[in-house]
Structure formats: structure tokens, C-alpha cells
Image 1 (cartoon, rainbow, N blue to C red):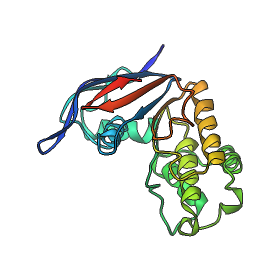
Image 2: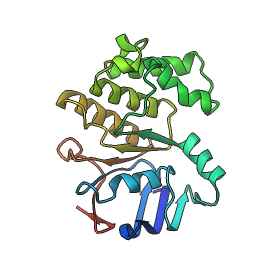
Image 3: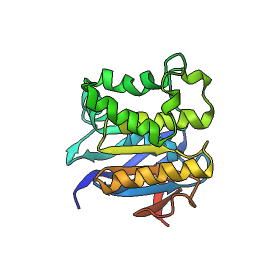
Image 4: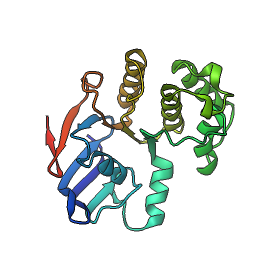
Length: 220
């Protein structure tokens, strides 16, 4: 398979606490994997490093066969063009509408916002039961609605890699199933998906499952 991410000997510490300890990880295009582990074990830290929001203390990170950490400019370019984020904390702008929040990354990344792009977003909004809320400011949405908006925002630019931190944490079983089905569908289309989750029941049918323990990833 065509490997998208290849990480070797990753180390990350906060003071004396070692969070990631010589961690190795790789994932190919079209794969979907989950990562579980106890609270505070470093799952979000690992996800932020994979998503190039944070840097490891040491180790190697290759994205599409090229080193991803040779400079801030390289990290920013890959992050902007190739990676979509689904944050547990949503990271939405409260005073902007649902549609404007979704369009914001496209504006910053020079993505052409044409009729085709808007149609794709409208299809996602309908799929995630958000169509009637497209003009509503996100500060008026429920937690589950905000999470679904953040997922549409991540999917809209069709990134090579999607990193999702508890994407169904605030959703009911029906909407959790919709989210899983969509992430699974786009992995079948060749996109790579990494999910940190406590919801192993929803995310049971994936390519690989890992547990982060003692700073390393172990197969489940």
C-alpha cells in the first residue's frame, strides 16, 4: 500500500513526564485506524504531532515520503493543504455562521469557493442534519451540532489525512453512526483516517486498532 505517514522513534516529554517514548507508527492511504488509552496517556499529544500542530522532542516524521518537520513553513503547508482536523473542543468561531465556519479554512488555503465547492458543502450539511442551521451563528448550537459542523469543516477541503479527536464524544448513537459511516466511506475513497476514541463500539470495523500505553502504541 501507498504509505502516507511514517513516524520513527518519536519522543515527547512535559518536564519529567515522558508522554511518547520511542514511538513508531505508520499508516497508508485508505486506511482507518483507532487509538484508545487512559485519560492523560498522550493520545491528543500524539494526534497533534501527527497533525503537525505540535512538534516532538525528537524522532522522524515522513509525510508522503518527505520529511515533514524540516521547518515551520513545511509543517504549515502540509497542515493547510493535506490535513483535516476534527477537534474535541470544536474550535469554531461563535459569532460566525455555520457556513462561514466551514468556509473559513478554504479562504485561508486559497481553495476556490465556486458553485461546485458550495454544492459539496450543502450535501454534507444535509447528510449531517445541519442544512437548516447553515445561517445560524455557532454560539447558538448544541454541543452535538457544533461537533457535526467541525466534521463538515474537516471534510470540505478533501484532505489526504483526517485526524479526529473523539469525533463522536458529544453525539447520540444515531449521529455517531452517521459520522463513522462517513469516515469509513472516505477511507474507502483513498483518504487516511486516524481516530482517537473511547467509543470502541461505534468504531469497531476499522483496519487497525491501537492502545497508547507507556508512551508506545500497542496493537489491540
